[in-house]
Length: 274
Image (cartoon, rainbow, N blue to C red; front, side, top):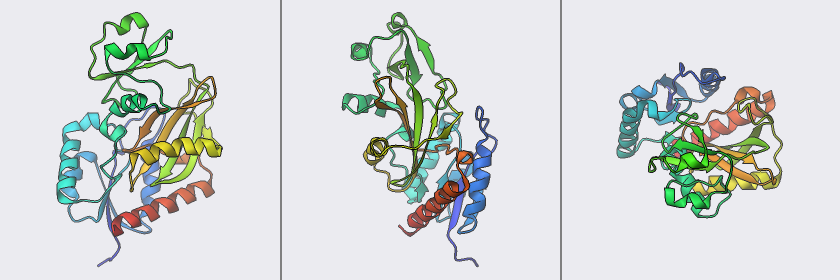
């Protein structure tokens, strides 16, 4: 019998991501993880029933949980109750828990796209031609729409967020394994979010991203800090993906991809040993 750690890898290989093939990323990653671990793949709907007997559960490209909310909540509850090691660990305060954190970080004065969720707070937002409205439980731009200032007054608040539509210069994403920065990618054309290129961040850029990783306090997990470069040059947080961030590994050169894989393996070994 093998003494290697047993990993249940949760993914939806058929998830139809727009302009991307999530399954390719998981095929590459699982092939490499098999070098160190005994690995089994399963759909997110099956994770709760199958996780017993594994040393850890890795949640990767499993799609937006709003498509299987009840099953996900059951998985979380059972994993916490049974002390299952989950990667990413389930204590995330960012997208893992919804979008409320954007409101909270705005109120705390952190460098975030200004976000409110109450009509009486609309005055805290800058006056712009259009505003972004999106559900607190949204993902993958599901439910996102653009409205005028006049339309804001007729919205039903409570389950939605409102942000100014910023004419940013570009979007950039910073990728971390546990608390270690790995690489950054950016979209030079604001209208083509997923046409990404390598980005060489300054130390200040990495410090910006690390501030949110530190705030989230996840010891075991992959996080993607998405930001935009405002017209004045300031970086502003767009979102902190701490559940199952897509990694765009196919855009890395071989050396950078290998560095990430090694870091990922080491992180899982630390989790299993914890």
